[in-house]
Image (tube, rainbow, N blue to C red; front, side, top):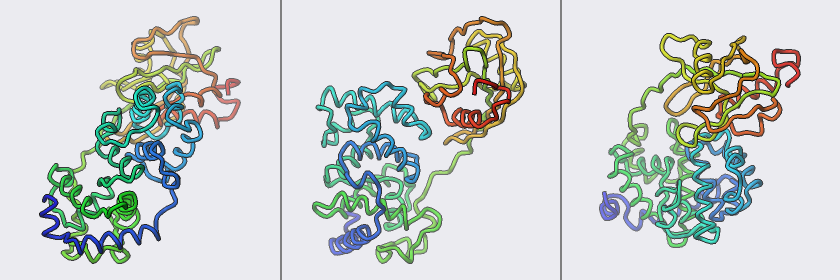
Length: 379
């Protein structure tokens, strides 16, 4: 459906006016107090929108406050060491988002006087800013009359329209954007878009929507036709892949060996404990010995198992086996084949570096172990 079809079939000017008014009134009375809403500068909107991708609002609030204390403006992000940026992002996952923020900040300092442009095409030219984020900045920061269609808005509008097309299809996405565009009153883009998002977050929930308390239920076609739980039409979920991985906490008088991942690929530029995937038929101990030899040219002795950590990502599930290790021959020096840097860190220094989530769980575990355990006086 295009705008004219939506207007003819469901959203007459009278209906859109009533729907918008009721949604705006509900939002004014029920909106959550979120830090990026209190002072919606372009920079704050940008950072919050990138953080909110694939992440729950409750988790983002703490990260957002911390980020704004460390990086008070675009120039501070541009000038910071990358490890500092990744450390501030540590635990949010999808670390390319943080690297794109810094790359975009550097471009903004060079070409835009360290300010985010209001033009949609200029915004979309920046690393990490796609159509959705550009629209969010234009609407929520600059109050431009453009639709902002996130997952919550998709669900709300698909139910109001009783849209039976696959939600990710180009046709469905066009219909949703056109529908939201029709709802935006003059000068109210920021409130209308946020109100629709908020309705999806608080009322029009994926599994148990509170239709009885919905301010726009009178306009909801899927409620009238009893298809609420069938909307939106979602793509089938793939089964996550299970991966067995091993890592070694290599102890030496110099500290614990950690290495930095390559600048491209999964969890790029993060620090990690050396290790890797188990090959078919390998035990974790065999895999760890092989990985240290292949990646670092180190012969090691594998000690006792510290723990097993399970961690879920979007498309795969990792089971991480972790062992104490020592050098088989003194004075060996790492030769890097799969990492860009290495260092010997004292245990209390580990928290200074950005690590993947599973490694952070290990660091937390090590920091709470008794002083007389294997790691001894290092802790």
